[in-house]
Image (cartoon, rainbow, N blue to C red):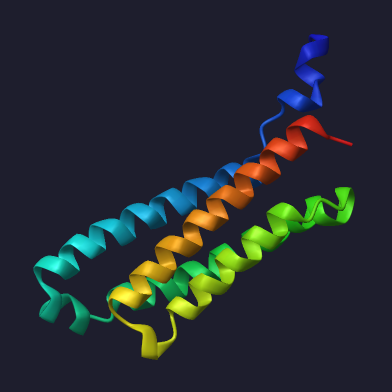
Length: 132
């Protein structure tokens, strides 16, 4: 193995990359869903599948975010990614409240996953340049 293969700045952070990928998929789902809602609002708002998908996604997103961002917070005391991620998670959790179905759910979810992606990108960047 070459010395550069062990350079911690070059390692890939799979937790953050996975979280960013999931955020991207969620954005794609939400934006595509928004177009469908705009075109077929009466039908798509009556279908609970999108809401159930958001609830199910939170089961994966919350622990992944807590582990990925929490380790940087505890090891490096770098608060920014965790703070942004907490706001993103809060928006996503608000989005699944029954009173917020429809366009509010989409807006909160899109905002939340965007903030989560930013938080994970900041986290990944910090870990790349401060690997201790």
